[in-house]
Amino acid sequence: MSPHVPSSDSIRTVALVGGTHGDELTGVALVRAFQQHPERMQRPGLDVTALIANEAAIAACRRGVDGDLNRSFAAAELADASLHSVEQRRAKAINAQLGPKGPDTATDLILDFHSAASDMGLNCNITGEDPFLFRLAALAIHRLAAEPDPLAVRCYQFPAPTGDAPYLPTIARHGMGVEVGPVMPGSLNAAIYFPTLRLAHTLLDLVAEYAAGRWPDAPLPLDVYTEIDTIPFPRDADGRLTAMVHPERTRLVYQPLQQGDPLFLDFHGRTIPYTGAPGLYPTFVNEPSYLAKDIALCLARHSQRMV
Image 1 (cartoon, rainbow, N blue to C red):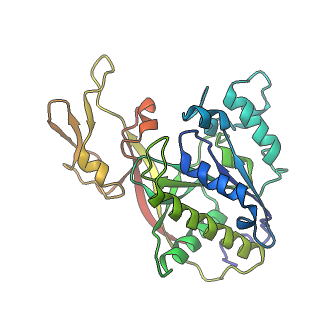
Image 2: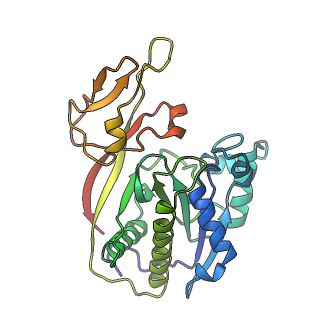
């Protein structure tokens, strides 16, 4: 057992979740495939459940019907009986099935499958600091990189939110997002789906090995990309867009930015350069669901740690 992971931490119950966002169909297809063949997700020592999170949003092929299900799991919102939108009701039902959120939760680990239109590749997403999840990500990354048909996976870290996190995976003791792309909203991409399936099987294998006490002791190096900022779209005084993300940026996700690099292109063909801190990594570039949040791209800082 890695010295960074508490030896007393038992993992027995696992939930695979897809369709938290209704237009992200990779996770939907993957979870439904497991539901059709549950023997393929079961592992010795584990009780694995596959759950479709938001059928109403999937039917509408929208991120959400009344809101964002993945922002509906704050404890106060789950406890508020007066909140009854589609997503709020669904969050309460999922919390009753997999939770309840808190120390008495029935679920040890949630793997929540998402997709992005941005060329993100395969990512293990971790919010805040969780030694078990970082170790799990490192083992998966190293194992898949060493296979005859190697698969590249990154570890992406979201900063710990202030106060109670509203994300679906937080109803388990450990919650990891699996973010894959590029896949346009409302579509599937076989070149992304099957590597995602490989990653899912590898994560399940590793969790079963952990439950059996068979994780190696030696620490592993892990490259971590930690989101630290976002860049909004250029707008005029009336709030209207004046530029688009430069096409060079959409091709260079996870490539470090330097001052002067093309960032935006206005509607007259003029380039607006990057002027921020050098060496940061653009992620979620030109992500369609982020337009409403006025996020053109996110910025991440790279570091390496031993886990």
